[in-house]
Image (cartoon, rainbow, N blue to C red; front, side):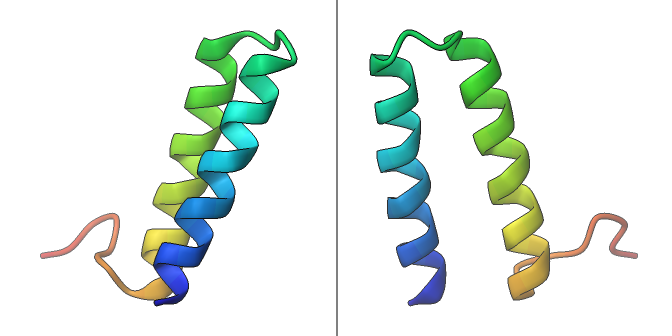
Length: 50
């Protein structure tokens, strides 16, 4: 449930920043990296799982 809340917050923030004419590539890359870090933090998979 916490993952869904984080995803919605990131989605709204991405939309806001893109509407404010930030570069979409930078916004999407930063959001993707942030979501991957949150996924690892929440235990949805490690970076180097054996």
